[in-house]
Image 1 (spheres, one colour):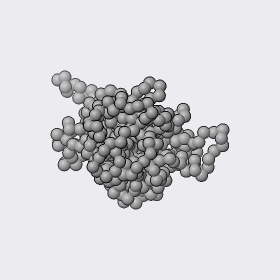
Image 2: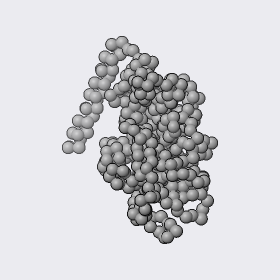
Image 3: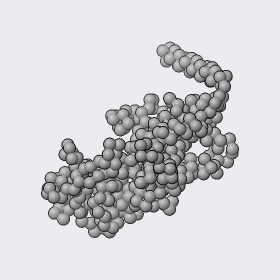
Image 4: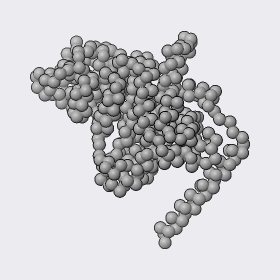
Length: 412
């Protein structure tokens, strides 16, 4: 919190931000302004809502502080920037960016809000360090709707790969370095993103579809066609990294792709050793690299899924109930900051205080539990909880009366 203190002109929003970050780390069944305000000891949620919507502070500057914090503590010369999107299922049509669209969170098309994230993955840990909200054409084609949701009047449609380019460019322009970028088929199939990374001499291992076409010295072929032509000796058994149940071994092969541009291009192919299922990746590196290096980067992509899981489960990344863009960007930034704190503590504990062999190393889940129980849990008198019960019931009574009034008016 000391690191971001200078982003606030007044002590009140700075202190309340600290309370909000503690609240998103708390063991609350639902994390929103109401529950956090009650947990930290405030009389109503009004001040928390003001912090997210109208208070004067710069969420983009805090995001930059977060990026520096993550890179400083999780620094790795062979770090991988992982880009991916995740969705939050929402009701109604007024939450900024919401529409019926596919989200992996639900595994189907749902009314959802989708954001693209950039995560930093190194040997010491991983954490999200940037975010961009995906604004569909159904929003950008309606300027009044965008304005009502707090978006800039000039907001234009941007694809998910274009949002990824924005975040990667911000990271590299800030003076930080990561030699690799990884992502799924949404990003690997986009030639503009690949060209942008090559222009910055940034290596990448990006998934592509089996129908993705590449040019070889023998002509143009789809990825699955080339896989069928590979001889048995072309495959090597390599680990894509350690998982919860041990190393994730697959069979791997790669094909050199000719190019007139500088650098080395490959098609990387992964085969499941049990099912035979194939996955494909477009790869680029400024210099020659061994197959094992490409495999390591491909395996790093799963770290973003772990980041989403722990960010949502431990830091309330998906639990906001906010309609306007400013509130969304502020909540998401502070939730990312809270999760990064856990990731950094975990990395420092592993490095400075390794545990005995009969205990697994401290996890983010265990650190959160201990931190809240031993350091940050507030204690309130009974009157505080009773006042909040009264406030909730009064608010819900007004809300119910308002619903009934609108219902009666619509039937008249």
